[in-house]
Amino acid sequence: MRARVSVRLKPAILDPQGKTVLHALQQLGYNEVNSVRIGKLIELELNSSDADSAKTQVEELSRKLLTNPLMETFDIELVDDEGD
Image (cartoon, rainbow, N blue to C red; front, side, top):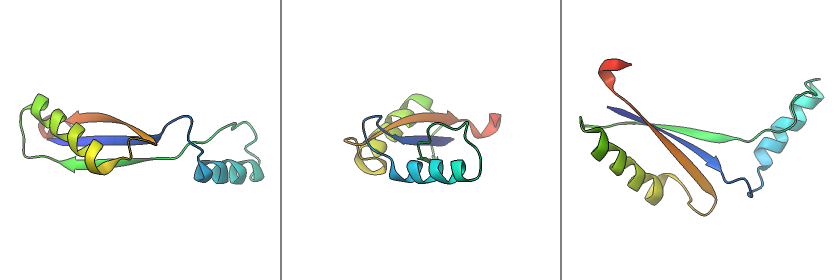
């Protein structure tokens, strides 16, 4: 089983990388883009066939290591290797 953890900055946190990308897009003429927020995607391979325990484990490691809970939020998607 695989897990995908999508990490994003909380709305109240400034995103200087997103602002830089927005500025570059507008310089290239993409003026219809009003806002850019940058996040990250983390993919994990798990030795588990039980979705509930896998999700619990990924939530725990996301809080402890993969994210900064003061600044970031995360969503988890579990993907069964057989049903890609």
